[in-house]
Picture (cartoon, rainbow, N blue to C red):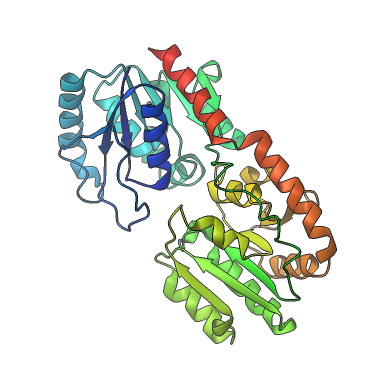
Length: 362
């Protein structure tokens, strides 16, 4: 099959989807809507993927570009003649695909499009309704986004929930993790420094914890527009020297950073099934995450991790201190975390399920 894969940028997730398409024996054409604002994937486009040159792919998407991009996307579909168009997020790529008359169309939610962007205006809500009413099939990575899609008009008989998953051979437990540990306690977070991911909440919580415990430190990876605010919180709290800023880490090197930690933290306000959470679970790392619906699908309180009240830095600090005070339980929590990843977060199995959807839509 010829698959035209249309996405916002080129991320680690896009690389995995494109590779799965090629590995599944399909011919992949990659159309990128925007130029990457930050380099978040250092691997080239997978071998065998045709990267399509068109009017988009060079700058941020703006609504006034919609007519010209729609006409050019229509041109692409006429020239490539794909058997299937796979497009998302909903309000950008899938909207252009619908306006261009692309069929059959598989619309894929990226989580934030249904959990955040749709609420920004009546226009965004209308687009979401319009796209989902004109979609042949819908793919989501979480039950919470599936339910949102139904509420916006998607036929529940034409949907599938497929967590994006991780490579369980690459992200795996360090068998020496707990035997090597000292009294020092390391917290780890690799969420982007944007408002929706709540890293500022973690920064405030860490200040509170570090003022009570002198044996705790924090690893923060990634970066983003909230960087100055996050550093200001840490600086004013007197804990900046106890934070390691790792920057953007390649997928190759990422497991090593999980191995340095005792506790993974995601303070995100908005998510589908978080891939970084799945990576942490796969690495056998106990997880402490915000109690938003998507995280509740993965983390069971006291079993493979813990939940804290979304946006509540005081409650997060309390939960961190509680985890530190029950270190003897962490190995079993970590083993349970790994088992939960093996049950639901195996990318090989989940990618195969997506390829079956492709075949049925042809």
